[in-house]
Length: 353
Image (cartoon, rainbow, N blue to C red):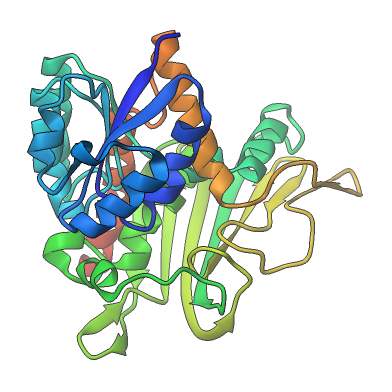
């Protein structure tokens, strides 16, 4: 059987979720890993069955391996640009952590490099592959709420006794404008929410944002609370509300965060009631129409399943010769969403896209 051979560039905490489907899928295998922290790379490599001589601290050594077909690039945002150019030059297919770059110009150059090299270039996005989100999408496409008119997304972060133990250095770069490109919640994690808006409503025509600033520790300013509003074509609208509640205790095994989505159509409303965690003890998908409430619970709801489904989709697309989702061009458009929100908050004006 033909096999997709994968190298990981970056083996931080999130890499465990990216690895799940590669480890379970008979058509894929992780064959090399790289991280500037050798001990961390060695730990992941041992867990994933990677040979010791294929554990690196310089990603150029990994890119030089002739039997690596695809690289998963899981690096801080400011490193995406050069790593992508180098991977394309080495002839490797690319799955890149979101957001893809710090500017649209960087994104365009990265796309051009991948197209010149003839390699597949995916911007990794998992929220649109979360099973409750996919069920909501299927119900909408089946006409259950009529034509979608508005979307509301709510993102809460807080604390949890079961949340991931993320090292301080893994948080620090997210609070540095030159390395992150924006704040941790609205720009970094916000990419997921902008992707959801795109998934359900298409590309926005106009963005207006208010992004607050809350100092959570000396020198660490969180971009919260915040509201981002979108105007879509055909008189449709949307909003994202981001709130950090430091004393809000959440049920989660990952980040201390939870998300909800409400989509209103011409004849009904649909809710996705969870994301990273489980704030409400209700079914994951709820539909209202014709004076009736219908609920849907026959699906996995662990956040890890969004990663599994996203990676499985990529493997399937690779062997079928089909484009992945997000394509690099789609990732570029989501980046424009995020950058427009940053610009609107700075200027106090709506931004046309």
